[in-house]
Amino acid sequence: MSGLLHSRLQRFTCSGFLCLAFALFQVCASVAQLPPSNDLEKAISFLQQIDPAKVKPDDQEKVAKEIDAAWRTIQKAGPAGSVRLKQEITRPSQSDYFRLNGAALVWAIGGLDEAEFIAGVWRTTRLSAQSNYVFYTAFQAAMQQDPRALSMLKTVLANDEFQIYVGLHAMRVTWPLTMDFIWGAYGPKGLAELQKIIYSADHDVATRSALRLLSKSQYLPAYDRTKVLATTRSGPVKFSAVQALGLFGHPDDFEFLVSGLRSKDPAEVWAHLFALYEFEDLRAVPEIIPFLNSPNQAIRWEALSVLRHLMTPDSLAALRKHATSGASQEERERVERVATLFFERMKLRPQGYDRMSTTEKERLTALYRQLYEDEDQLQKGERPMTRAAFRAAALRWKEKGRLESAEGDPVQVREILSAATADDIELLLDVRAKVYRRLSDECLYEIERIDEAVKFLGRTRYRTIPASTSKAELKKK
Image (cartoon, rainbow, N blue to C red; front, side, top):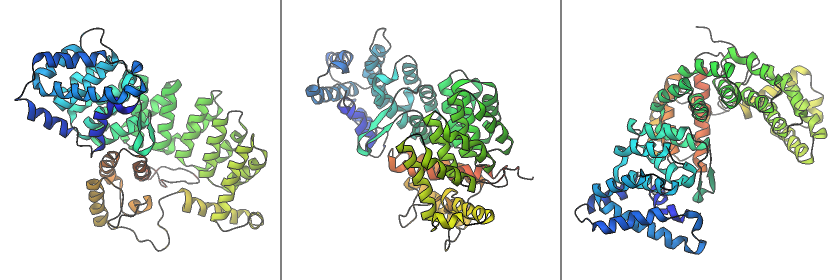
């Protein structure tokens, strides 16, 4: 069914994320003029009878307007309307659509005071029956960064089925990105709750979601448990924990991450390839090269990504060879573009590179990594930020919800890292929370840069070289 039947909720969300302020204003302004009880009953009854699957395309706009009118009628009834609606929501045999629609309206009327009720409804309802009513309600609750919202947020954490489509940006938001937006908007104060989730391990999806969120935030208290899950669990939870270990990048985990490449399970191999990409230890390159010839396309393409990221003379030689022997024309062209881009960026012809000594090739590929794969080095002519300038800029980013300079230019990872320390991780996560509010593909590019800076800063606590290195080593205390 099209977005028309949930246009009311979307409009509130898209107009500055004011958490349904207009709806709440309507409720407060209308309590004095209660509609007759039969109007309230008719409005609730109408919502109960809606079956989105049976609404014809030509009737969608009409039905959307009728839903809008029913919401207004129930809102005008004030507390009595909310109580009556909640009674019907909890009555047996109600449709999932009505329960989600009604819970969204309960949120519009009561906000965080109704968080526990809404969470209870969601726990017993198929959330994908109308994902927008779930996502936008949870997202608005998260943006208030109030502990009362946690019951709602923990409920959706265990669901990987609901998704939304943001028409304005032509962006489909599916799991785990749904959790990134919701929990990311709540900010760093939610990390301790996520850590509890991975210790309870009551639900696999919740555990996997929490592992991703914790590692992307470099939440070090979760590291030990992550390692336990990676080494003792099996299946998707294990794979998510492996990927999280790659993000943490602790030197002690290198051998374990490489050992997973010997698995017979393609999903496990892929998880370890992903982790080695993030781990950034060049010793993995010889172990990864053979996977360019894997019969599994997903594994071949992930191996390609890792070798491009961990560029060495051996990586480049393997990629150039695969550009002529890949499994398909598309794959060969894809690998050829990677190799061509290397030579173009380094302003060098392949023949000139081939005449270089091993030492010269190592120097050139190291320079390539520094310029195009690692994002921590300032470029020629750039000056580092002072601590004071960084703090002032971060507060501006947080206020505006944009990772941009005072002149409106994008702020790069290297600029952040020129002044930030591990003590600034929480501040950057606060900035990220405000950037997430924009709910767009554009904001995700900024989120990616913040995450990369946070990953680097997190590793400075225990690793001598946080970015790509010939050997990840423990930092001396």
